[in-house]
Length: 370
Image (tube, rainbow, N blue to C red; front, side, top):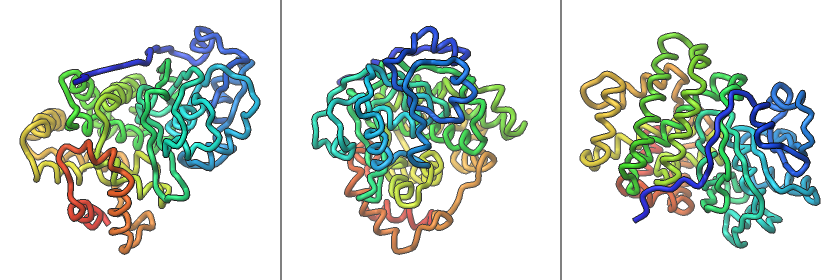
């Protein structure tokens, strides 16, 4: 059984300009980014690259429509390398642009075309949660299906992941908090995955320890404290990405996708709503094994003797409030619809649960959180 792999080279620079110089950005590079990152970090460098500003093609998280519109924009542009400088949306889009012969990204997500890598991929994350710079996964809303789908294939793994802490400076606190909570979800879901092993648990443990420590610092000192720990949180997100890139994630992600797809709830915020409820059910069904070791780790970090999840909920609530699902517009009759959607479209994730969840148990989670 394979235990661990990391195909991506890792680099770190204090400034984007240092990266641009070291990687020799040129006219053969397609840079997918955002205007709010281009203006302070790239514009003055007068780089000869072809730039795409993602937000000009749609707001929010990635969708098949957004990706296909950008595909048309860059058709005929000669480039050998894709440089992704952004958060989860930019990164998930960029991964599809390294593939050969993509005309409609839905065909790639549904694997109706061969998944073949044609161009190099370099990723600079500008949030501290996705870990996507080191995973083989791209997630997008498939508008015709009203849910999100994932493409998991080594063809979309980045050749280089580059950590530049200064790129996080302009991230508003809510986006910072949601993405950092997402990284904690990645680390904890990876820790209890059936594919978890001593190598991945090393990265999970390191990510969990850093993230909770930073969260406690923010709770004690206020949101501005995050600027003292940008490098730490970026590294923790990367650790979590390395871990779940090897093990996968499970029910927290699976249950969050219908909410995100139907009501455009940002990925990290959507995961947050389901996080501890799923883990409470895991504990109820099988309190021994990896989840017992995870609980011990959380108890130590949170300073409690047992049952860390109420205290964890309290800590996360000091960053951003946890909402009832109805706050986002979800209707009571959608409880069954969301449950059915998860069972029909998210088997890739459900197969990676700590313990299997029945249809009734999934439906009950939606009811409790509604």
